[in-house]
Length: 375
Image (cartoon, rainbow, N blue to C red; front, top):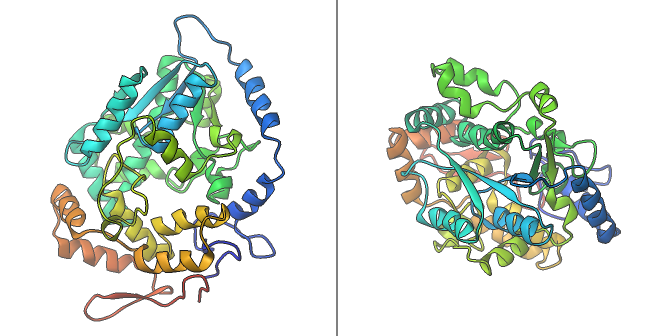
C-alpha cells in the first residue's frame, strides 16, 4: 500500500494507477487543470450542445438526480446558464431506506420548476438483491447502484432523449481509469466502472430473481447506446469550480437540506454527501476495511488539492473518522435485510483486508498501515 505524494489517495483504489513519480490520477489531473482555458472549454460545450438542437415541446437532455448537492447544481446550471430544458430522473429508495431530507431535496427540485420522473423498482426485489449483494460482496449497494446507473440511460431510450448529462468524470476526478472515454467529457465508458462491469447481471440471476424483475437493473448495451445514439457528457469537465464543497454551497443557497448528524456517526465532515439515505455510511466504513480509505479520505483529498487544509491536518481527520459509522444505522440496515448485528459484523470481519488490518480474537479491527505513509 502506497500513498499519493500529494494527497492521501492510496494505490488500493480499484482501477487506479499512479504516475511514475507517485502521483494519483486525480492529483495529476488537478495539476493539469491549472493551465486550462475554461472559456475555451465552455465554447466546446456550446459546440457539443449545438449537435442536439432544441425542439419545441421536447426535453433537450436528461439528468439523473438524487436531489443532492451535485445534481441540484447540475439541474440549475443546465437550465439557467445553458438555457436547456432537462428532464430529471430520480431513482427512489424504499420507505425504510430513504431519508426525509432526501424527500425534501427532491421536492425542492420540483418546486424549482423542474420536470422530475421518479422510478421505484419493486421493493421486495430490491430487498432480496440488497441482502444478496451484502452476502456475496459485503457491499449492499452492488445491486442498488446497478439500478441507479441504469435508470438514466433506460429512461433516455424510452423518452427518445439522446443527450445524458452526468456530473464528475470518475476516471479523471476520482481515478477509476477504466471509465475514461475518447475525450475528457465522454462518459460512454461509464459502463466499465467497478460496479457495472464484471458480470453484473449474472449473480442476480443466480440469486433466483425472475428475469422480468431484473429489468430496472440492466444497463443498456453498447449496441443499444449506438442504436439510440446515446451520449453521456460529464459536466464536471467543463466547470472549473466543480468540487464537493462548492457544489454543496451552491445547492444550499438554492434550498438543499443537509445532514445534521455528527461526524462521529457518519464520517461526513460537512453533512452534504449522499443525503437521500444513511446506509451509505455502512458501505463507506466497509470500503475503508477493504481498501484502506473511506469517505473522509475522499473529502480531504479534494481539500488538499485546493490548498484549504494541510496534509498533516488531513491525516488527523482520516485517522479519527474514516471508519465512522453509527450503530443505529447498522441496526436499521440489519432489520431491513433480516440479519442480526452479529451476522453483520461476522460478514464484515470476513471481508477485512488482512494485508491492511488485523482482527483480534475479540473482533477488534486495527490498522497495520500508517495513514499517509502506507505499509
